[in-house]
Amino acid sequence: MTTRIGVIAMQGDVEEHVIALEKTLAERGALGEVIKIKYRGIVRSCDALVIPGGESTTIGRLMQRENILSEIKTAVEEREIPILGTCAGLVLLAREGDDEVAKTGQPLLGLMDVKVKRNAFGRQRESFETLLKMNIFEEPFPAVFIRAPSITHVAEHVEVLATFDEHVVATQQENILALAFHPELTEDRRIHHYFLDLV
Amino acid sequence: MKREIVIEDLRHGSELLKRGFASLQKGGVIMDVTSAEQAIVAEKAGAIAVMALHAVPADIRKAGGVARMADPAVISEIIEAVTIPVMAKCRIGHFMEAEILEALGVDMIDESEVLTPVDTHHVDKRGFTVPFVCGARDLGEALRRIAEGAAMIRTKGEAGTGDVKEAVRHMKLIMGEIRSLTGKNEEELRDVAKELKVSFEVVHETAKLQRLPVVNFAAGGIATPADAALMMRLGADGVFVGSGIFKSENPPRMASAIVEAVNNYDDARKLAEISKGLGLPMKGIEVSVLTEEELLQVRGW
Image (tube, rainbow over all chains, first blue to last red; front, side, top):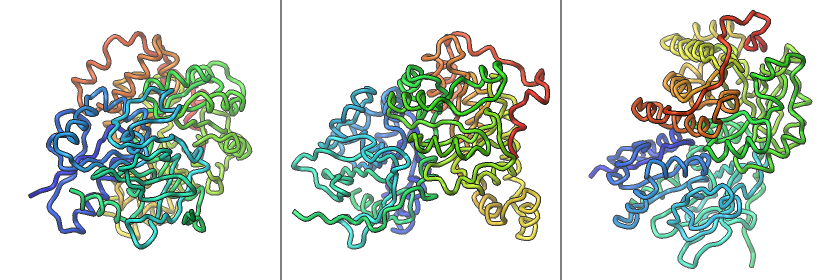
């Protein structure tokens, strides 16, 4: 059977995720296609979803306007499809945000029982690259943090996959994966493989 | 409890972080603002970032005189007011203004022809931690800026006019020049590099990718949702809107309409709905009535 992976394409580094997923599928020799989702009515045909990095306020508003937020909730509740969220995607997956999230009134999907803090590491000059130890891999992962959020509270049934300097930066709840950094901006595709293992 | 933290390899200000930041702006609208109040309007409308200025380009054009970096107090107020990235402009070649903007915590610096240039050399952008965006009229300008370290390119267009004609011309020219690299062998690409005064490597990379090696936005004269959609259709990765928002009759409505237009640029029916009843766009000036001295796009090398 062909796997269909949808990348939410309202705004952000959509193309980078599409390319990373296509390369990952090719490396696995798996049949599959990667599509971009800008309009309602497409989420229900997907076996997995990716919410990319970008501005969570912008992506959230545009998804709400197009009714894609409720389509994703339905897809997860009825079919339990896997979702990967990176950076802005992590913010959108969270149950709860910080004051910044409240201030901008941005909508959240609330699919992962975590609380997030936007721009937890500071502004762009504080953005950083590091080799991150993750408990799902033997070797550290080259993680790119760009005005990244962090996870400030984790519910009991959510697994912490990585922490950096006391910040939780990667979590998994069943088949939902949330990362504060951008695996799509590097050539290391272990996280995309790990995600496709969940499909 | 012992934590395992891997920080020996912590890096700031790398090319990957700069270009990555630019990639995250794709599909978005960056809006010129002159106060914290305007920045909040832009953020609410769905802007991905704001550009902090002391006056919008239309007013800079009208006022004449020397146009400089905005007041750091205003930039700091804007940084405090919004959660989205804040960009600001420095004069071409004015690396000291650029250093001050970086110290203020600005997320990206626009080395901009809208301000009065101080040098025929552009800022060497490679030594900075924050990324830069620069204007370009053609492929040569774009690649020279990238070679100097720009992480993002935008068309120059003709800022402060509300006339999108020049942005269209610059975007088509850059796209056409990239297409013309196709099929050229190494020797011919070396000739192109010589002609454009850039390295063979950056020309080769552009030819291979069939696009600029960094994110490419449209700017200069965008005033309506249709203008923004037009630039996206011509291949822009996103748009900057300068005077077009806060010189229009109803800035909040114009701002959110342009955000939606960039998202729906391939759907004319949706664009028709989005464009309805927005009030008057900025009045503008037709570019063809400007004299050579009045053009901002000729600044920069």
